[in-house]
Image (tube, helix red, strand yellow):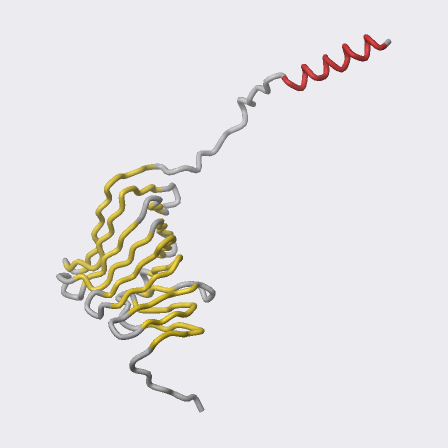
Length: 183
């Protein structure tokens, strides 16, 4: 009787170790990129005037129309005449959600307004193409440096050229501060 139990135990163990065959009727949906492009250079213009230039070492396009830049992305914003770079945004990773007209950048995100010589550093930033706005989530830390000031805060909202901005929970070294009060 003991031998019989051992054989049953071995038989069950062998059945459990057999390779499972894939069900040929079960369809596997591919969710990866539909197309990959290297050394991407994209121009956005209006009335034959350059507005934005995008560069990235790798672009992955998905069936939804969304685009991912897994190895970094750089956006250059031009003046109204399309001749001068006004603002630059870079990140280690980027994604464009086509249906929302929204770019999200993550990892060592840097923004630089060339004429004002002001820079911003954060870990995540969004660019809304329709509203021409760059912003972070309210809890996202932001560090800004200008030739005269150093500003730290949370929850940035700025125009796409980073010429004016709003922050919450602000600290830092300020040279010119105008105090305003609300009634």
